[in-house]
Image (cartoon, rainbow, N blue to C red; front, side, top):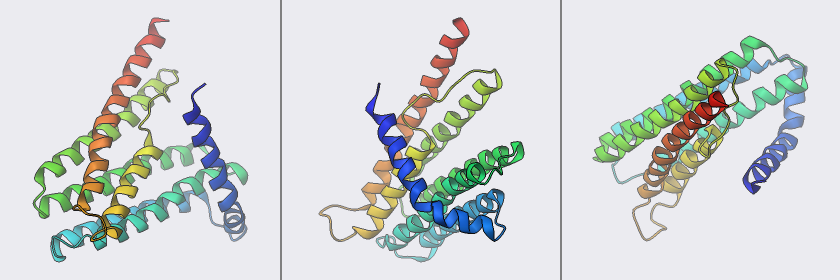
Length: 220
């Protein structure tokens, strides 16, 4: 058995233990999973708006707002874990809730990566914007292939660069770019650009891996 799924599940369970008291308190005051999901996408939209603002009104060599946008997006992404955990622990699971969460997850990625692409375009890194569009294509296709496979009654959760990994790589790149500027010996923008290169390659690889996985299942 691969070690990676074990490590990933261990981290996930640890996060659940940390957020459990807050989740139970939120349920008691009447907050629902769908409300949490909505707050998450609004937070991502605000983070993307910060990137647009930085691109238009900040000095091109100042990446500090990129780091703070990363902080906003990571807090919003935590809500993506909260809504599912809340639905399960408070017996609030609904078909619409699962559908709503999945749709807004796509919006979150579209907003964040579009904000980054806009930022790169406006600081003179058009090639990095193209890479970000490729990572966006891969991200959407990973989710789409899974959805189509599950529509055929097939399991399709294979692949390395799934949504949690993409979110972590993107946010980590933003945080390092913003808060290590002037500390590292090179231009810290390479942290977030490098993250998008990784996602562009491995997300599209994951999408094709899933296509092959589905083909094998259909042949069997």
